[in-house]
Structures are given as structure tokens and as C-alpha cells.
Length: 419
Image 1 (cartoon, rainbow, N blue to C red):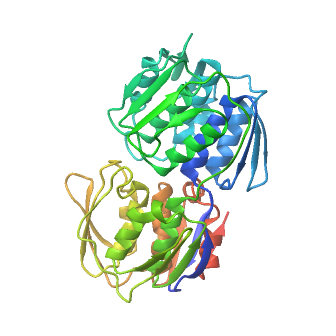
Image 2 (cartoon, rainbow, N blue to C red; image 1 turned 180 degrees about the vertical axis):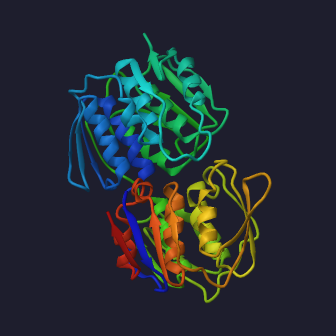
Image 3 (cartoon, helix red, strand yellow; image 1 turned 90 degrees about the vertical axis):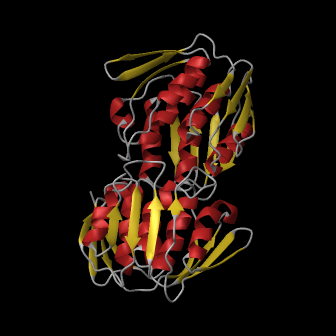
């Protein structure tokens, strides 16, 4: 496991291109199984979760060619309807392969997924929906075995707008008989990108981005070429990097409309924001302002995946900010590490409300990344801190950022990765 060595104090300034989205590429890679043909995917982020997805695809028999930007997958030769427990444990999003395999083979043998420990992310929503579509499900020795003689479209109402469950239903329904109507669906932009990919290979999906998605099953899918949407969480992270260090940044190949939940809060913190069709510009204020109250919500609310990063920023805002985490009850492991750096953060008795009293400066320390976004938050804090910071646990950060140290170094950050 690698570490990041950071010397703080540099104002980050410059221009960055936003690469493909982690949360879009993973369900897309799970859906390539469905077309039994060739999928050409551009703007693939070179992150460890992508590499794990490739291993899963190869494990089930697909042929994969990947040059770090474009991936070509031939799923015509896929002939295995199970994923090894070892690969499943490496990332939470591996469970999305359930929908792709079930839609293609009508049978799946899959174990419980792993990934960052952020609290309960129940898979019962996924399984309940698949049962409604005619799937028989049983558990044996830690594996979930799903079988369906016929997959039949139906009306499914999710108890919660789960992103993963929405994606699994879309994949399973693409080749099912009849129409599947999904209500209380997740509305994240990555759902829209998945719809575009599925429709590109001949599926009939409508309504992604709203709370009602209708999937009309088709008999067969075909080869497809697709470009992955830009990563709104990586983009938000780089905006905060400039803001927390008193710098300025221009992001290119971005989607400003996807970033509004974050940029609106950065404006509230005193930043200047300007955006056009595919660019976003941020200029930091002389002094950061606190945000009175911020609550994480499913899209279009403030994304939980940006909560740790905005907390690092607010730890230097002059005043008191309050954050309420409503998505993951355990997304707070970065707080103890930020305190090591001098942050003044109080966790309320409910465990999901955080009171941040801004301090004048953070100081360098040795801290440990416990999860993906928490690790990014510690790197940002290190860039703004006085002295040297060492962030342990790079494997978490590498799951979702394509060489984050290179991007930050390109903006003038003094950061070095050591394997």
C-alpha cells in the first residue's frame, strides 16, 4: 500500500481536464455482458476499480483490450455466470455485475460485495426487485444464487432511490419480456450515462435522470461505441483543492450542470465560480466563509461523495459550519485524522451531524486514509497545512482517482506518491 508525501503551503493554480467518471464506468462495464458483442468505450478512468472490473470481465470469459483511455470488450465469448468471491470483496460496486449476468444468462452465482466500509448499503432492494421480475433467489455458504426461467417486466417501486439497485434493475430489464416501470429511481447523472450506453446497443430505456424509468425489453442487443461522462466527484475535489489553498483552477471537459450542487456551496463559502458549456473556473477568496448548514442528499442534493472534501475546506473557514450526513451513517472516519492536523470538529450524539469550527491553520501530520473520499479529504488538508503531511492508505484513493498526485502536481501542489 502506497503513501502520499505532501508539503503544504502552495496555492494551486492552472488548468485540468476532467477524466471519465468512476461511478459511470463501473455499471457500463457490467452491462457490456448483455450485448454478446463488442463494446468500445472511450474516456475510461485509469483507476483500480476499473482494473478490478476488467478482472471480473476476464473471469467470466470476456476478452478485454485496454490502453488506459479506450477499452474494447468482446463479450461474445463470455460463458461463466459467476464471479469469484475474491474479486467481489475488492469493491462494493462489483454487485452491479449481478444485473448484467442475470440479464444475459438468467443465472448468477455471486457473493456479497466488499469495498469501503461506510455503513449499511443493503442489497435487499436489489434482490426484492429481481424477485418481482421472476427470479428465484437462495443463499448458500455466503453466495447468492439467482435463477430465472423467464425475466418478466413489472412495476417496481424502490423503498429508497438506490443508485446500485436502479442500475441492476435497468440491466436485468433490458432483455426481459415486456415493460419494466421503475419508480422512485435514483436520478444521478451516471444513471443517464448508463441509459445512453444501453440505448446505444439497442435497448429501449427512457426516463433516466427522473424518478421514473421505463425499460421495454428487447430481443437482442448489438455492438456499441460510447464515451464516458466526466467525473463530477473528481471535478469537485479539484475545485476544493484550489479553494482550500487560496488558488484558482480552470476545469475543461466538465459538465457544469452536474457540479451545481457543489459549486453553489463553494460560492456560499466565498469562491468565485464561472462556467460555460464544458468548463468551470474557480477563484478562491481571501478568507473562506463558513456554511451554516449542509445536508448530504441523493442527486440533485449535495453528494455524499463530496462530504469529506468540503469538511476539509470548512475546517479553515472562519466561523462555524454544520454538516448532516444522511446517506452513509459511517462516513466520518476522516474526522479523527483531520483532528490530528488541528481541525476543530465535533461529532454530535447522533453520529451523523458534524460541527466544524474553523481554525486559522492546519498543521502537517501523519494520517491514514480509511476510505476513498476520506483519503482525498486528507490530501486536500495536507495541501493547505503548514509543514509536511504523510497520508497512508493510498489503495483507497486509487480506487476512484486517476493518479491524483499527478493532477495536483500539475496545479503546483507539492505532492509525491511512494509505492
